[in-house]
Length: 67
Image (cartoon, rainbow, N blue to C red; front, side, top):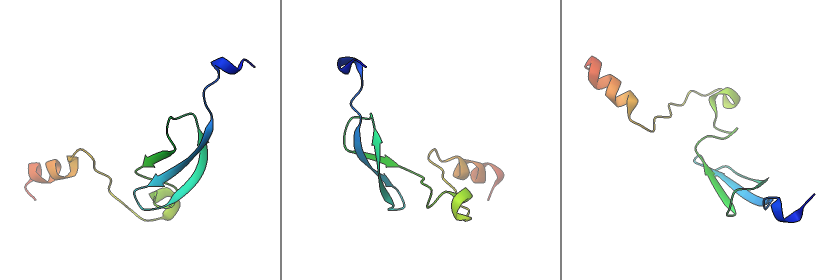
């Protein structure tokens, strides 16, 4: 394997919006990755319903139907 063509593969800390953090390895530059949903707060794994609306679609729909 040629060393000069391989990306830098190092440890990073992943931080979720819910506060959960864990260590993994990645080729992403920097030592921290921020995510919106992880396995602790995802509805499939946690069994809780959570609406994630980053573009205001829920409010737009409610305004459209008159709620």
